[in-house]
Amino acid sequence: MFDLITPSFVAGAAALAAAGSCAYYATYAVRSQWLGATDWHGRRDTRAAALTFDDGPSEDTERVLDVLDRLNLRATFFMIGSHVERLPRVARMVAERGHEIGNHSYSHPIYLYRTGRETRRQLERAQAVIEGATGVRPRLARPPCGVRTPAYFAAARELGLRTVQWDVAGFDWTRRRAPEIARAVLDGARAGSIILLHDGDSEGRRDRRETAAALPHIIDGLRGRGLGVTPLSELLTDASGEAKSVADYGAA
Ligand SMILES: [Zn+2]
Image (cartoon, rainbow, N blue to C red; front, side, top):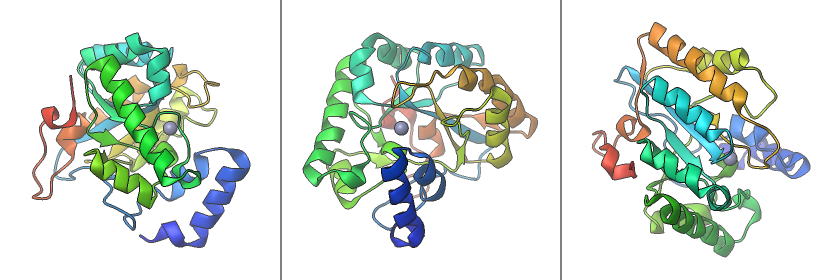
């Protein structure tokens, strides 16, 4: 619970600094509640899990959308503001196809290394860019690599953003083929899981074809154990334990 201040946190920060990579932190420290309220899974009393996609939009987002359409599923896309500026048409398409949109910063910095003012600006700028392109003002946020700071929580609170991490990852930020991505998800997924995948790459280096190709396997596997896929907003509970409606979280 207090992993933000343990040696694993220090090691994670050092690994991030050395490698410029999310991998360590995103794997080990996403569930801490120490600095502020964070959802990392949804209600467990359902028969569903939620799919979330980070780091888009990208040239591969439409590929992911097509698979979701074919399977008649809705997901949540945590977008990077600068990527929305580059591909506003794709960002708009995500909203038009009925998916939820969240704030994943403007340029994907690790907030730990930014001032409070810069952190707030990142969140504000992403809100403005996303709303301008899609007509949707996000109500959900996921900080880059899952790294949260006091300044991040202060800014998120002021902007009315709820922080949502994940409890299951496809590890598609490493070089993996579709069956491996699907296996990683299915190994951990259960009722109420929030599944982390990527429809873009924060550094623009990697395509997401393998992630798109993994989706039918993931859905099949979930169905095989009696689980459907539901929008994140329907999986999250409010303070009274009630699920919010999709409209509360900025679905188009
Ligand atoms: Zn990211």
